[in-house]
Image 1: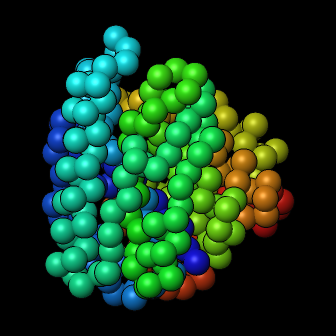
Image 2: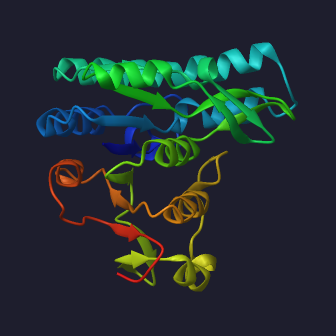
Image 3: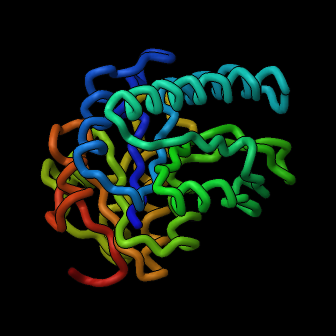
Length: 251
């Protein structure tokens, strides 16, 4: 079992609302097809198909209209990704978190994975995405793809976890950090900054924090650059490290 998240910064132009990067979408789908992995769960970020909409329509609070417009936007990206996967003969189906997840103060308290489990049993790749989700404390909240990965990692105990982004890994003083653990994170924390464009899920700092929390369960993960052709395939098909490895101990 492999969990792989493809960031919204890879699939979309985050500086332009609802704009897909067609070349990157096609490239990622092709590599997933080439890997021929059946025991795979895909999650993708919302990018410019969710963050601008959430900031615009939900800034004043709970609104069915705002929820719908934001959910509709992320579903649009999900459909584009599924269309490209199917054009490459990848057996994939969507799972929309709004229908299956509930939050409490922003954290997952219920996640119905019945359909996901059945898909995997039938060699179908589930494709989830960041979404707007109902929240018992706040009415609604934004569920990031990173938190989805965290929940599924603890439940499914995957072989490995990948986070495909638009950077080569965790960068420090112009170079890539090959390995990061909890103690090293404190050293680098101030250097890990968010995106320069709208990101309502916390950006890279939230991503690293989520992965370090997963590492407490003994599950290793890797942040790598999915915009570079070949990196997704390397992650899925080999043990070659292509980014920053995150675990609890020293490498």
